[in-house]
Image 1 (tube, rainbow, N blue to C red):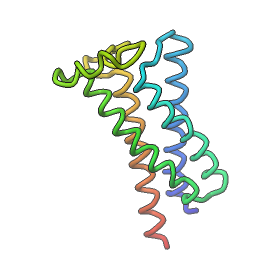
Image 2 (image 1 turned 180 degrees about the vertical axis):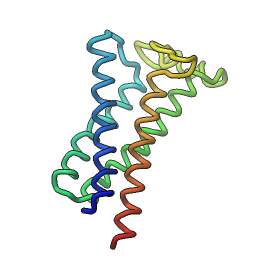
Image 3 (image 1 turned 30 degrees about the horizontal axis):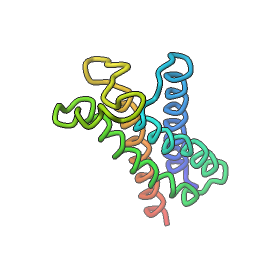
Image 4 (image 1 turned 135 degrees about the vertical axis):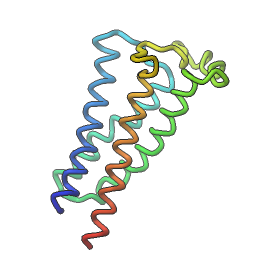
Length: 141
């Protein structure tokens, strides 16, 4: 594996690790109960740490192809969740999400940085770094 591909794969792994630890911090340390859509995002994020970690150890980007799919779906869920929180037309959809309403905002930094926003940024970074890894691999083949 070339150095640039390895670096991009490491970025995907590091972002997924930080996102996983961040979600655990919010729930276990801060005591925020995750809503239903947060759980779906966790289900899609947590395996990425293992997938990209194994791909790094093995030195094979094709081992991480499922990470591209999970991060793409995760980005869509995060964008939808963020829209439930911030777009008035979608807010009524998040009120009956489960025990914790999906339109609730535990954090709201700078008026727009919420937990789904952070997750969405992480999923997009992972997705883009994986696409760049694939492009780099094809360029070197």
